[in-house]
Length: 447
Image (cartoon, rainbow, N blue to C red; front, side):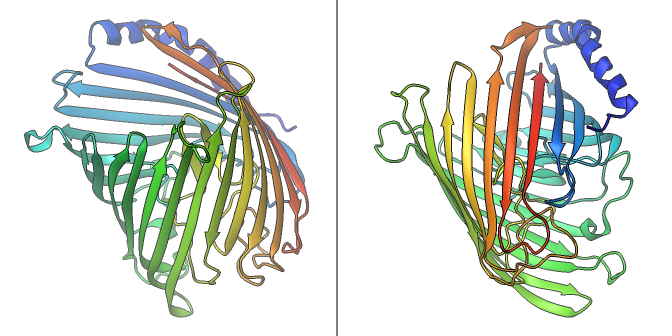
């Protein structure tokens, strides 16, 4: 395994002593200024596998370390504030430019500092407790990140009550906000986004709704750096429900349908873009059985057009069914690009003991079109087309342990440790790259 940079060791030692350094500050904030909240989160990961290299490459050791402080101010009081100010920083060390879905977002190789969030929110807009307006760099999340999974500089008008919720947001990426990546990628510049959602609660634990995402690339025709311009609209519907123990067949599910239509322009001219995607998961929990097992089926299917459905920089294949799961659609090793895709998997979860979870998932990956683009993120540049339908199979094992929360420095200390093993058996659709494997050990502490 390759050695981590000495600066990461220094950072790790600093993080070990950080609780003692901030104890006084945290107590002061909690007792004397309750309108302010200071939160800390430390995430570390080591692994052995291909990392960010193409599947089938030589395996190597890699590691990541991140410290994430967040400061929130509530004015004039914390209980019912009129204003909320929030700032979140990332101090990250990434070895060998490797990132995994267990980490939020991605960071460049080496040491970096990033202003992840910085926004101001006006609560009770127009004296209506359901309305709020947020301006600044703010996060956008969805259970299936096919819609959004990033922080975006934007203005968001949001409404929320007991039986309905929604928002409308306008934004753009003006800067990378990262100390290493000083400039935004040319292909992400000058793109305006419209994000919108409206949802209704039709059951105690069930929501259904509609979503919309529009992107307008208004950059110039500089094909040397920005090789592609796109103007497209995504529309879709979703429905989900959880913790329905009275049902015999399905106790929880989440389903989404998306459609994309627009126009793409590159050096070869203009071309229409049309595509669709269906994704979801349905599970059954057996709470009366030992270990309370849960059996689930997960599936994704997209169109098979070469210019069909795709993910832009605001999206990913990362699932966020908190607190049950957080990771990629196909496990810890394989990341899907969700184009020309047919993916389905069977997942079994169990709880061997209190605050412990064991999960096993077996998946099959296929190309919808035997000669279409490969629906994988980490592939060789020389081989980006399918050579058949069978992409391969994955086996993912995941074990997680959560500590009982403890009182610390006037706040609550949480700690989680997870170990994951991902196996990939290549199919005939891959002309290059073979079987691969990767293991990860991840720990996360927050207070």
